[in-house]
Amino acid sequence: MEMEPAAGLKPWADLSTSLVVSGQEVDTGSLVMEFQLADSEEFASLDGVGIHSGPGWATLTVDERRSKCADEQAAALIGFLRSRKSALEALKEAGKSVRVDVAGVAEFGSGLHLSPDVLAGLAELGIPVTFTTVRASGEDEEDPLAWLG
Image (cartoon, one colour):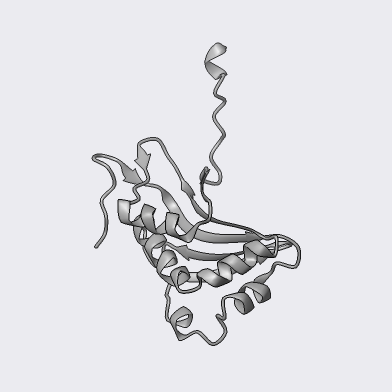
């Protein structure tokens, strides 16, 4: 059920939808433990879903291997997190920053579509949603004031 973006708009490229957790003592291990992923057959069976981390942050990410559609990526993440809402609450109570981030390369003429059902599901999680746009690597950054000459 691939959702079509708004008329004439192509989807963002290199799209991923992630639960982002940051704070002290946050890493892959803490995310696996908090969401009980090590023993989760549901997690093991999710193609295109992975955990990434760095100093003080970790993500549970749904990427383009699962779907190139933001709506389907977000729906997969919501479905996975819905039954783990108590774990989300525990992270927030422990002072961790928790949010959902939709990231991708937004080129001229591209758009991002999220259905009302997915937006309602994100609201139900009770955590902020952010959108991060990146530019394709190797492209020159356009100077927005170049027209001033």
